Structure formats: structure tokens, C-alpha cells
Image (cartoon, rainbow, N blue to C red; front, side, top):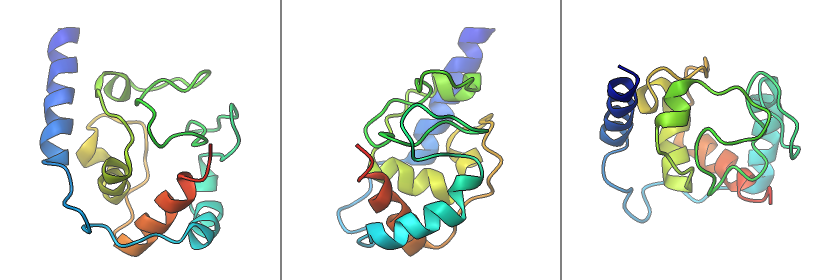
Length: 129
């Protein structure tokens, strides 16, 4: 049964992500504005400090990281089994509607519909290395 659930989650995540975003599908992001948005919206559940988790995992180094591997965070099985790598394109789609991309995620955030705000947040996340 666990294998079936894991396979279903991976298929759902792949279908929700669709084909890779075309170049230019996300607007250019502003990391300064993204930092402001992060500290206004995301900070409620996440940190930008390496190794410090809250209700959600630390987002330090998230860009390029595989889903479900931040040490010390208790991920949902859906995130662990999703097979997702958090590229900017994937994050752009995920932040818009997390539950659509990873059904069963613990992330209760309903999503950010504004593409510019998503791009700005991701631009900031890319600086966290």
C-alpha cells in the first residue's frame, strides 16, 4: 500500500508540474523585495537560517535541494516520496498552489497567486547559500 501511495504522489506531482516552464514564463525576481515578502509571509512557518526549522523546514539552501531531506524536520510522506527537486521553476509553481503540486503536503499555506511576488520570493531564496 505504501508503494502505491508513493507512486500516486509522484504521478500527481509530475502531472501538476507539467512540462518544464518555458524561458520567460516567470517574471524576473527582485531578491530585495523577496526578502521583504519572505519576512512578511513565509517567516510565520519557515526560517532563512541554516538548520533552524519551525512549523516548516528551513528554506536556507532550498533551491536545488530534493524535497523531504532537510535534517531535523518531520516531513509528510507526500513530500518525502514526491521526487521533487526545488528548482526555481518548480518553486514558482509550488508556491502558487502547494497542495496541487504535492497532494498530502503538511504545508497549509493556500498559495500565492501573484506571479511577481512568487518570483521575488524565489529570487531571495536563491541568495540563501
